[in-house]
Image (cartoon, rainbow, N blue to C red; front, side, top):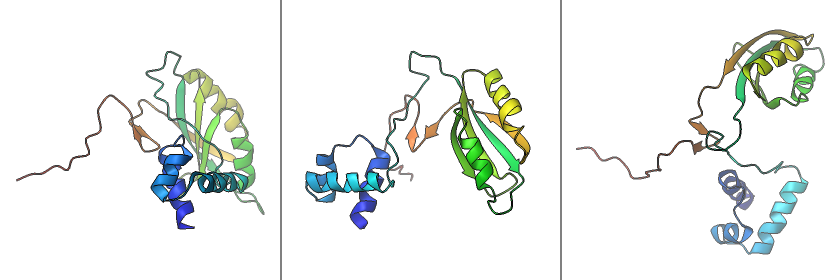
Length: 163
């Protein structure tokens, strides 16, 4: 169980880490690592692999990312789940979280333009029966995502020593 947890932590940092390297770090042979990976994928513990992309450096249009706070009327028997399922089925939705605090759901969406995001909110999200209100926040700049710092600064892991 501990090896499984360590393997998952390694993959969170680098989903492309070769099984051979994982094996060296966990003191396991490559075949055992590959079997563990296959088992984790089969059990849906590992749901997918993705890259963290700095779109400002890619030679393609960047698009717009928005975080939308949603106040929802929970439904008897299903709570927030039914509404959440309706929302995450929209292709524009990249992430959806149930939150504590003032709002119930946090929705992350991506669109080509701010107008497209606005249309999603006004035509699809806010028209759902159980949605009471929304607040949309547009992402202006990405400094860090999934533990990865964006920008050209090199990581300096030295400790600061002050007199």
